[in-house]
Amino acid sequence: EIVMTQSPATLSVSPGERATLSCRASQSVSSNLAWYQQKPGQAPRLLIYGASTRATGIPARFSGSGSGTEFTLTISSLQSEDFAVYYCQQYNNWSVTFGQGTKVEIK
Amino acid sequence: QVQLQESGPGLVKPSGTLSLTCAVSGGSISSSNWWSWVRQPPGKGLEWIGEIYHSGSTNYNPSLKSRVTISVDKSKNQFSLKLSSVTAADTAVYYCARIRVGAGISPWGQGTLVTVSS
Image 1 (cartoon, rainbow over the protein chains, first blue to last red):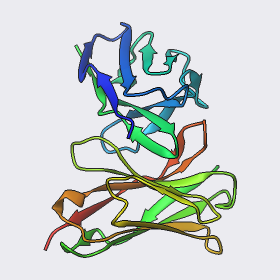
Image 2: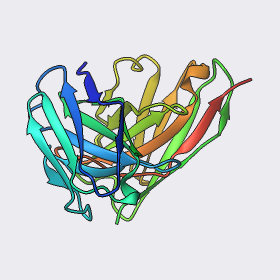
Image 3: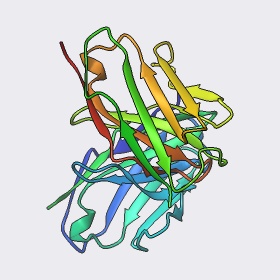
């Protein structure tokens, strides 16, 4: 099973600042990597797929990069609605695994 | 657009079988997508349970494989989850969702809380 490790567990950021979230795979997943945002009481929302492609309706301040085993989600200028938990997810060899999540909180 | 809605009992007894159904609307379950179940224990992260294609092909999380069955009913445009021999550790919000290969998991159902308790 491919293990996904996210860091940090919690990120404290002021509104308007940049946030950088990391995700590492235990083995290469090529570009089969997606990012999700989840707010309390809501289902996850797809932000990024294919490591760097924004999903429909996702603002340009969200960007993804990386391939192989190292991936990054960047939020260029945090808005109030961006404070949430973010998960990375890989899809490889007919199996899906998620990272444990990074909570982005208001500093 | 495609929408998904979970339904099923919110309370299951220990050692029993958890059964949920996901109704797909706004699109055909026979489209070129996989249909998946994901769960989230209270206050914890996301865990993939498994997926099914309209042909009936399935893939399961190895840690749950011995207890999970996912099936599809094309006539009703829905798919289902059965998880046997449940314990309190299976208490979670269960989501159904569509997986587009290479394009992520979207959309998701709203989720349904299933509690395992006597």
